[in-house]
Image 1 (tube, helix red, strand yellow):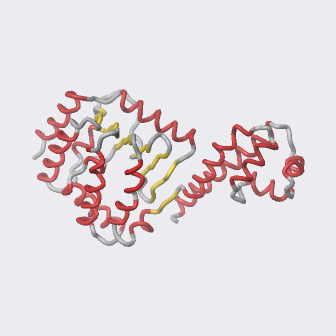
Image 2 (cartoon, rainbow, N blue to C red; image 1 turned 120 degrees about the vertical axis):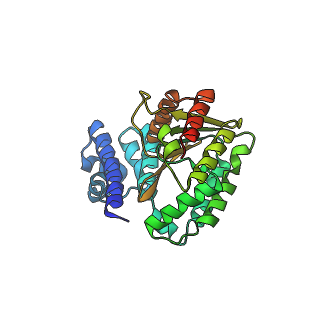
Image 3 (cartoon, one colour; image 1 turned 60 degrees about the horizontal axis):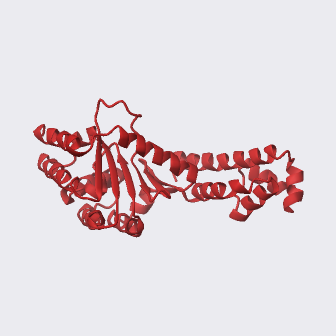
Length: 281
């Protein structure tokens, strides 16, 4: 794990320790009193509330019971699990190529009924053509110095994306207008991609919003996907973060709602796409 990634993980653990200390303080308990109530050694309380040790699920439940704050336990447990598992380094998962990365997420995509996507950088994977996906994945492999199996990975991504045509699913997708003009691959690749975007925007399962460049909405964020309001996947340069803490998932849901509210939909969105097509040289 890179220094910046490990620092982020430690920050997440420190936030949990801070919340544990806050619960103890709000309950008017000293560390020793909490140790007596839980049957622990005082040193264990010290390690947990300083962030030196990772609490187990049962540790958190016991801490919350002792503090009379049982209602805080599940959110804290989710946050603790997130801190433990939050980072999946791109280089580690990509070291055998990108095709496996695409296939690994298929079960999550298959079981998700409502998938909210926001992208400020590229056309979302669910809406990519094979040529666009191959060009993008090849560039990722080059930058990360990993095996370039971009054609096979693009096939896997396109196959995975067939879920947008299945009944009983919903895909509210929001992109920034600048995404339409960020060239990936050749001009022909971009023309095909934008033409495909016009097609899939008409699917009953897809709700496409495009945030105009001049829209007065919140600042652009990193690309993220919310799976059934239960889990968020955030894509960074060096790692993918999985977020499951309910309060943080709620923030991403709120952000998606704000972006969607400020986005162009329907015919207005199609006009923005058509304008980007006309500007291709």
